[in-house]
Amino acid sequence: MEVHVYTNPGWFSCRTLEEFLTSNGVQYEHHDLATDQPARDYLENKGVKAVPVTVIDDDEVIIGYYPRKLIPALNLTIEPDLSGKTNWLSEKYNAIIQATNRATLQLSSEQLQQMVAWRPETLRDTIMHILSFPELAWRSHEHGSMSTDDMKACKDRLQHIVAPASIAEYGDQVRHDVTEFLSSGKDESFDRVVPAHYGGEVTVVELLNIILSHSTHHLKQVYWFMETELGVKPENPASPKDFEGIITPEKLI
Image 1 (spheres, helix red, strand yellow):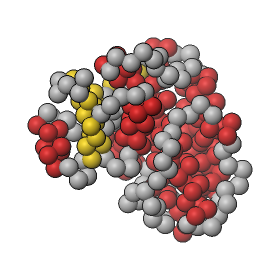
Image 2 (spheres, helix red, strand yellow; image 1 turned 90 degrees about the horizontal axis):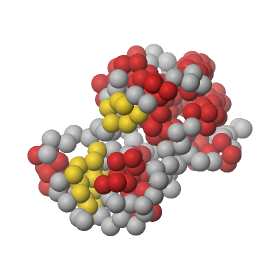
Image 3 (cartoon, helix red, strand yellow; image 1 turned 180 degrees about the vertical axis):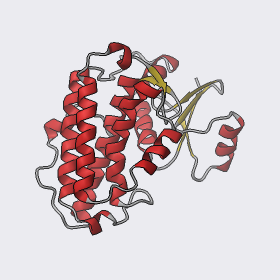
């Protein structure tokens, strides 16, 4: 079996995919799309516009980090750990979003406008990213997707939220909505399959699990930036118990 993996540097989903493959002993050839023009041309010829991408024997193409598809395609003898228990997800979202709000309220509007180290955006943008992706994920059960168009529309809608208190107020609304949805017992909504922004298809609960890891990774980056770049020690940060069971890449930046 010949496996090729195509990623963009620094992307959460790309790092997570590579760590998943490595931890399960999968041998693969890596292609960095930031520097590998032939790799970009190859994906373009296949009509692939999203990353990460796993190509098996130049035939099967799996877009995104989706263990449910990767495990059988790679003949792995493991069970996908999707943490599909809605109570667990609700508890974790409650903890991570509250921790994000506490960190936000420690910062001034000026500090929130500082550029971060991991991508060309401000600290405010990263925090809104942490909070808005869970909203997009849970709402996908209503409108059937979490696409790049959905993400752009959400970003435009939230542009006016810039003050720390306003960001935290938005975060608290997201926390309420996500945890209420996860406590609703609506199995039909949980199991709805939607196209996600990574380019693959997952159930709404699987998507919420992926986005929980995504938001948690960025929260850890925010903590690092607060201490290292702003000299602000997070007060009452998320605890090891809060982080327990949430899969994030080992590499922070």
